[in-house]
Length: 387
Image (cartoon, rainbow, N blue to C red; front, side, top):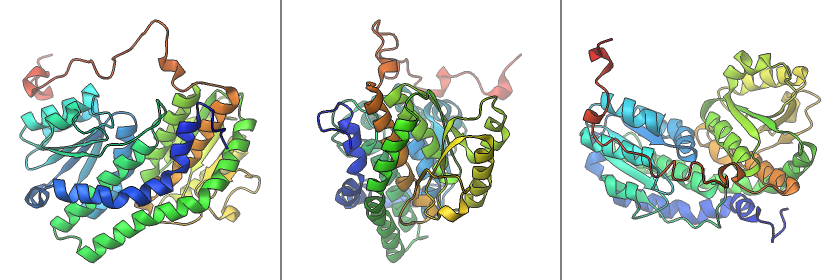
């Protein structure tokens, strides 16, 4: 438990209140999606691109497989710079670009909407800030005001972006006739059930995170490893550790760990392995044994069956329930979020200290950057370059 008067408390509260937020907002967000996206547009789209920066990009990755499975459309997720300047020019209408930015002020993500419209593509802004710049550039806006307490690493905003993208995928699937209303309702029921599963797990996760934070308080290097849709949470979890504690944290894809971090000179790093039931769970169990044999300080997220883990793995965040794997990222980010809160509290670190440089270096680096507005402002297509 983080004390009520601690400056880390607002982030902690957002984590612990996630079940209540999902219950309160799921129908509100679904209504917004259905009132905003025109049925005829949903029917004509042949391709989806989701773009964003930081947490917004990770929310797209976390939702990619759910969006694709529900809509039966090919879905690509790219960081905003890559999406706007490289993916958009190669897309062919009728297609749609979902540009995700909680603040609505990030230059690169706004640029994706601008470039997409100039290229004849439909655009949807996903934001927590109605009336922001990105909502003014997109064709349609999925913007729901989001109350956050102070300047904290994003938690609630990450959940909202995932829900909006998944609900959009479900609605598009209905419009295209690949889901009937009963199937769509069942999928929304699975999303709603994540709140119950989180409620059953959060107190235990909080205790484990506090214990691990005490054991890992002096560590400055962390790894978070996951596969499938939860790879997004490996990246997101690493981001929360950096933002909250200023440590160097790396998110790595499950199989890539075996090809890269296996060779570390000093592999005894605090390592979170996100391994809920799913298509790559067997590989996660195999690599958990390898990590343990290398001496990694291993904590496993997502497996409620401790019998499949290495016998000496005492630290685990068991998720007390399961949903389809495509929705599991809504369940598996909380351990790292809580760990980040407790590490910051126990070490008395301030959030975002790496961005609080006294000389003001980098201020406006996300919002004031020059934006490219048409394909003519980009270099010629690669095939036309004269070298």
